[in-house]
Length: 293
Image (cartoon, rainbow, N blue to C red; front, side):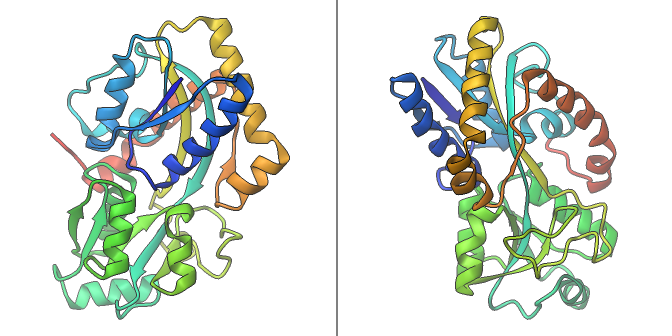
């Protein structure tokens, strides 16, 4: 079995996929590999899964594939209704707005003030047009009336590395990608994208607390198969994966400790969530001004 991850190695989605693959390998008694296919805001890896036709390939991806890309691309290489067998929405998480240690701003209000004093002189990193960091920052720019230049990178690990080195002062990142750098003092967290503060960094205020409730820095990770999978097999995979996710030791080590929120949904719940979120995100994405073509 192969799990395609449309993001680079080292990011939060990849970390979860690798932890899951080890447990699935034990449960199924066969090799389960992770195949990273990053690029184009998940389009490259997603298209590879849709066209796999081998019966042994699954996709571990985020909401970007299903509820962001349809709003920012005029044409997609896949159909979100026709080309997939949804299995489970595994986890969700919110991203942190992080800054390089050298940036002379330690809070989001200080960042806004700095950006207003230096229009166009600050930059931020993302993993491409339409990515959550790009959407969140463009919304912040619109709401706060500031101008910060966008610098796209190949993936969130590369974006975080750029902030750690001071090459770019800002990005948004999940806790698995940023935690050790925050704790070591190499970067600092200015705000959290969740509705409530994270217990991992309880002193970091939410964007809502700071006056920017419109910012959407929330992500979920789901598991999908190509269209036409045998229903009994799809049900078994969903059942096995959710059993792993909810196993107390795995949940404590691989989910809670890494800042994820457990979901472990049914396939039907995942399908409904996609429909609801696809509609609800139309306005915020239009507000951000994000468009790829």
